[in-house]
Length: 280
Image 1 (cartoon, rainbow, N blue to C red):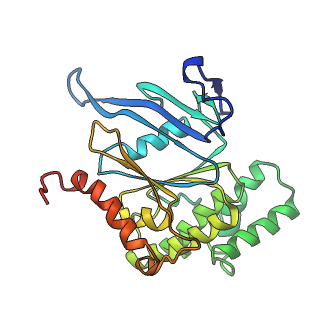
Image 2 (tube, helix red, strand yellow; image 1 turned 45 degrees about the vertical axis):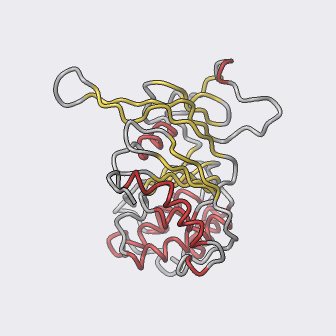
């Protein structure tokens, strides 16, 4: 299905003269029917924030607050109960194929080799064969997967499968990439390796990334800005600029100048959402 984007209503149009955000959530509410009766569960209620070009934005919130739902709305896989989502100034009303979507699962095709899995988006976009081979080799090298081109997904570790799913999305250069807790199922050591690899790929490509996580340390290590969500019905609790130098050390982030102070500041804002009865 192709993307269908309609012009934003006048009352929601972005201000002229300002750089248009790549993605905007404008007063978003989302409710879901409860299993029984006519009642609904309100998850999102008045979520408003925007994402700038080439920015790495992390969305952090407690479990069940609607983080993944926001990505579904951004990609056009779902629609809000109230408010509008805009992509490049236009209201999203259908599947948006310009957005790359990386889910919690690797979702590699088991009958295709690693090379063929990563190549597939380029085939769909009619990229010439020679260029496809060069680009796949380049991205596999960036992801540390050279030498595994002819392996099938079941022959790869969980971390390797995840790297493959990321480069399969980045290789066709979507203007915006959204990632839904992509490293949540990995062990701590593999997660650090994935943080390093993702930062290296992002710094190489400078694509716009929206990264959903429940891990505050992960968010502060990776992002330019962290959007903190509160408990349902969910709104934006705070937006925090992460002014740490790049490139960043994914293995010892706490050794970076200003990291501990930045983490403590963000945690101080977010703590009551994780420990609601904490009076500290």
